[in-house]
Length: 248
Ligand SMILES: [Zn+2]
Image (cartoon, rainbow, N blue to C red):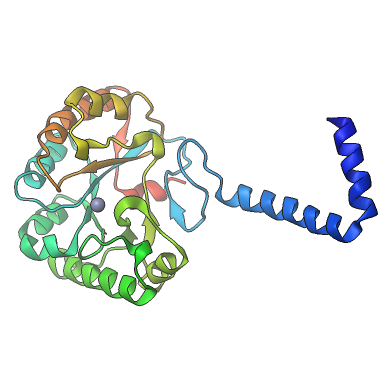
């Protein structure tokens, strides 16, 4: 290794222009790595939140793709029974269908986040299309909840510079989820699997991903009280994403 490094350095010095270019690539690559490399819990883009580094025993439960009559009210009741707050990343066109569920979520002090109007893959659309779709969702939420959302979760977790720019324009902060806390409940893996995926890796500041829409959410509804009981016994509190972000 040392021999290789020495020889390489000699070569670099001999062909200094080439060497300088390679060194710049290495330094540049290092910086890119430091900014974007993944930890076990999430990426490092400063514009996106995957988890909140905190010592406080608090986590944020999040539910995507609602509201759905067949599952959201049941989930809401369980959360209230367990004195747990959560964040619902809702789809604008669903909000127009069931604004009463959003009003109930707001009355129960849950946080409502933007999950686009029509659940489009934002990274595959133009800046203008992204902007319009997100704005339409924010408008539907504002109308139903009485206040505009401040958080955005992109469908499929995709993003690019245009998506982030559109989010900035609409004053939406992008929130993903902790990579160790993805229940993948949409695939109906079984109640035990959903519970295990949450409780076995949980850490203070984690953001847990569930779904309250899309298809039959019976497993999510059955897993939720078990998760709430287990984590409560271990001293965890359940707060909204915005509240968690203030514990930084
Ligand atoms: Zn979604």
